[in-house]
Image (cartoon, rainbow, N blue to C red):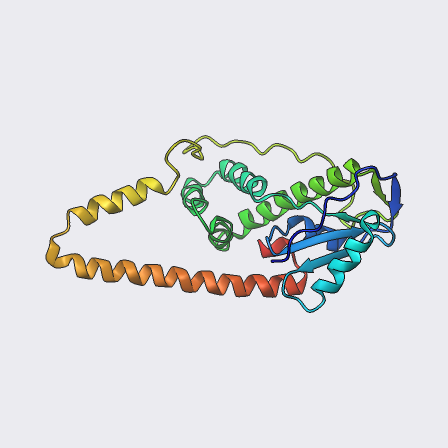
Length: 239
């Protein structure tokens, strides 16, 4: 990836822009190391620079040549978005689904697994999308306000208010301690492996390698799906 652009000026005047709200929403939710987005402070459009794209060098130079004319868009961090998932899981009343979601957000690939689990639960899936949209819109609101920017045109999602706190349903807690949600299962798997006779270990290993290969293939398909989702401009269903 190309080095990030220099630090931009902070002493900017208040301004009102005709904002491209949809593109701004996509930029705020996208948290990729190879992508940066900037708000054009003259037009209100969003300029996105992705390493490797044909126009990346040209766009990067345009921003570098006019640092006061562009503002880097700060996306919601992965850590922040992970906390959103944790809070949502804590509000799920179906204990079976809640257990599955707790396990899904353990380790690398948590965002994709979380979405995949919700596919079989359309009502909870829609509740998640609504909750996440409120949080994204509040993030956008605060970011604009912090930079003294207002929209000449209203956002398509209407007036933004602080998202309400989700109710915490009693049941298995979303663990924040030393042992992550899936560690108990991994520990149990290791105990079972240790109790298997040596003659049966090749079969057990073959099955585990099959599961690992299946997970790798699924991750590759997920990346392809993400590319299609980004191209279609449907940010809410992309994660």
